[in-house]
Amino acid sequence: MNSFGNHFRCTTFGESHGIALGVIIDGCPSQIPLTTSDIQPFLDRRRPGTGDLVTQRQETDTVEILSGVFEGKTTGTPIALLIRNTGHKSTDYEYLRHVFRPGHADRGYAEKYGCRDYRGGGRSSGRETAARVAAGALARIILSHHGISISGRICEIHGEPDPARFDEIIRMARDAGDSVGGVVEVVASGCPPGLGDPVFGKLDAVIAMALMSIGAVKGVEIGDGFVSAKRMGSENNDPMRKEGYLSNHAGGILGGISTGQDIIARIAVKPTPSIAKEQQTVTDEYHNATISVKGRHDPCIALRIVPVAEAMLALVIIDSILAHNRYLQSDRIKGMDRL
Image (cartoon, rainbow, N blue to C red; front, side, top):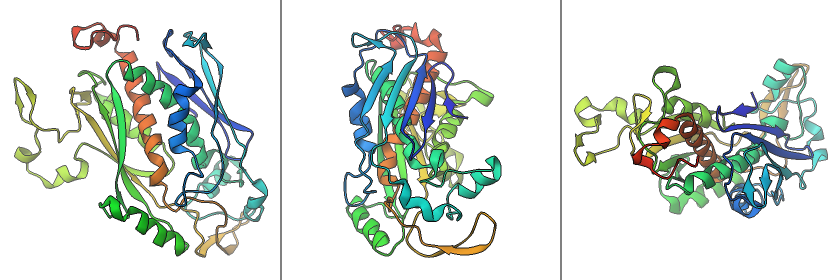
């Protein structure tokens, strides 16, 4: 599947070493002010080459609006956003033509499709997320007009929660030819209660699916997540008074429906699989081999995944709001009827 959402539907396209990446957004409301300068800051946060601890691939990630906008406002028709690739060096990947990279989707793609794009992984590359960020930027712009904000942060790197040590840990791994993972938190604030559907359409289930669709993510928790399994019910429940909830262990979702509190999710981000350390692997003819992955790779994906996770959360929230127009007409979220 290359599409996400039902009412705010995004279809992404493009490969890491192709001509461009992009997204088609269908279902965006009309009359939303939109220019490239509204989207670009979000892409700038994700783009490569911004420091010595991220990949040195040089890409401006300049976004182009191809359709769906007239005189600076959305028209209600499909919006096409394009991000051209300019810094790819496909010849650098020639040595991988017949060798699978451990920890990557190389072997899985070959076994499923009978072929694979060895030039950086094609659609399985982290570069695919640029299109998600572009779509998420539009979702966040719409949400911000109505008091809903999305934020994210790095909670820990390689098990270390002290931000002052993040750079040190990543440099040590990089200098050793290795990589590290981390934990990232994303929060949606200002959401109305009532979003999401019971049983299979639970809001937390859709959020988990959206975040797990990011290539490097191997785990998702909502609210206190796995910590809740170690508590008593009396410790984990969120008490209520007429003023509202007194805590938020549930992460803003109960019974699959938003409570009106902050919606909180955390993701486990695996270490970058492309590392210089020699690893055991096989060729595409399944002969044993060893490999040391060369090239420009992030020693820690968590550093650049924050805007991607924010984008996916924003896409879930905007889609959920559009799916529940009855809430948009209520006094609780007055002013959102334009959506």
